[in-house]
Image 1: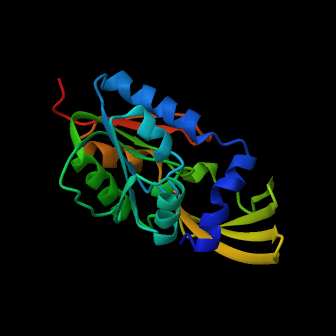
Image 2 (image 1 turned 30 degrees about the vertical axis):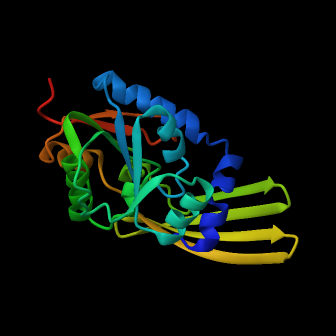
Length: 239
């Protein structure tokens, strides 16, 4: 998952779609402070290249990340020096502290392969919340939203680099299997690589049950930031 090749072009491809990580971070911060007005610390789980974490750092006194993939983590620290990014697995991590807000953005939760793994991740995130703290999770698609054979394509150009991305989705058990092929053109030549992404199609009810069993209230907000909506939970024990 997440090779060095992908890490290098990841943000470029999504910028070409109009993705605005800074605006999304600001919206999430506003949403969280609607529940916890004094929130001043945040942990971004599965933070990837820190495209959200960087902006979060301007919105919270403390903003840290957690990332399992070394290529993503290393690139994040190279592009955004000074960030604190912990190496860890969202299914079972212990950073020895709690935060006002914990986020898991851009469908990263979907990479977990079973309901048990997803529930473990939600429980681990909840354990890192202060009482009254806010958990924000952006899901992958629900099963009823899956489209067999879906094809997506992108063409991104920045500076002297051009990247083409095309993906094809099929159903694998209860997961989306995406074969994603990249063509990268640079002054030194043209190269290709392929990534296989498998994202589980958890149901809305499965997410909501995981939140409640982890000690959080939960509400689902459809729509933004990417059409899949957000689950927002508040940890028990707040005022």
